[in-house]
Length: 464
Length: 101
Image (tube, rainbow over all chains, first blue to last red; front, side):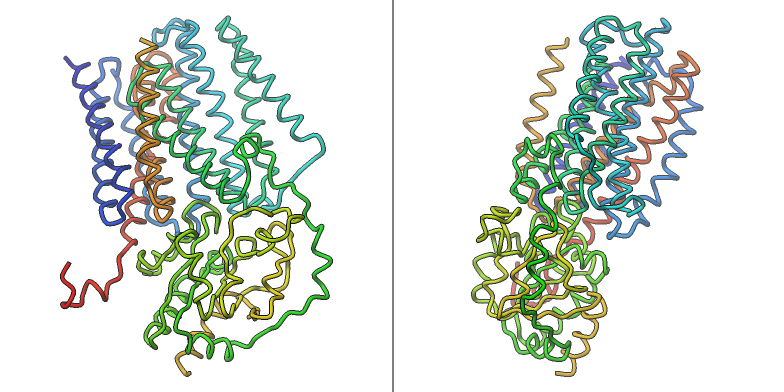
């Protein structure tokens, strides 16, 4: 009877989770839908608490309370600019939970205290669970470190890196096979966990800051697969379902992100990215003309423009300038201009990063346009205002076959009548590639911190 | 039993893929935090590990797992809600009486 109640609670939870995810297709329904999903989680937890194997509630209560105490600030107080590292950290937590459950099941089974029977399928599931989980724990931690800039965000590479990673992966898989064949080989089991942890570090270390959207999405997928493997090991269907949902979501996002960077998915899977030929083309740019513009002149252009497209990039996030952007847009609109926002899929450090920042600054979401929706409108645009974006607006991706980013879909900012670029200085972008947009006759550069420049623009437009 | 579980996995993966393809890029960040919160369901496995008193090692590992998973569930759902609350349509249009919805 109790077993049936538990299962029933899982069915309800699964339905509510899927409805919740489905609600995310509609921005106006999403909040309600996700609240339903949260109720689903509560139902599943209550359904589990009546499980017949649970005899002692003290540790559970303590864990739930402590987790809630840690989780509350992580949910309510983390600023939106820190969202990418916040997500990386929670991926690490989620994977750690999967690893710990896996180890505890393995330990119990070995010491004959019931739990899972270590036949081949269950041991294989347990093995995959701890392997993927452990890799995600450290991989996500390194991603967190890079995003938080505790670790250098530039790619750290050494010769033979991919070979070393491949070898490690091979050894880890061999250990997995050894444990599956004979579960009593504890050293193989724990050795595999350690190797996977090392591999997680080595896989993310060579990846640079701008490639983080792909990595975060990929780790999300791994985390889901680890949860699904837990479900297989424990024979728990809700874990399998959620793991599959999570895995599918991460998988899909990493495909979308890698497409937006013109990298094949296999290229991403094997972590062979971020290398390229940095600094190769930088030298040539030194002599090219650059037209700097004062805030006053830029403000005049904006004040009298009838169509403006704002192109935000990571620079806007770093400067936390989203509120000034909205203020400027409102001023232009008050003067009769039309303002739209063009969002490149990989602008920022995680999928959808720019959208959340702008939504936080009260920019209505129907002003935010995807790349494909807005690219046709640049030729009719009076001023394209680029704020801290570089590679995603580099025309070399469209024209220069020798460029490392050739083929990457970009925002056609260079087709606008005039372009104003807000930038700290003339340093090349993350990919280290010269951007001809900055030297185009229609482009003027407004140098300085994005937030300060925007504040100046706001007061100048007010005065204009 | 294993075959049945494989069915569940594959079908749930399909459902997930179908549903998530339709999520607009606008909401990709909330999507990530939402799937993160949902994958906190590993709490269910952690609860059993922490509460079934099979061995001290398992209980302690289970306890830490409960803490991690609860952190994700609580933090994940809260931050998703906080983000979704911020996405608003254009207000002036909604306010103007001449435009009934």
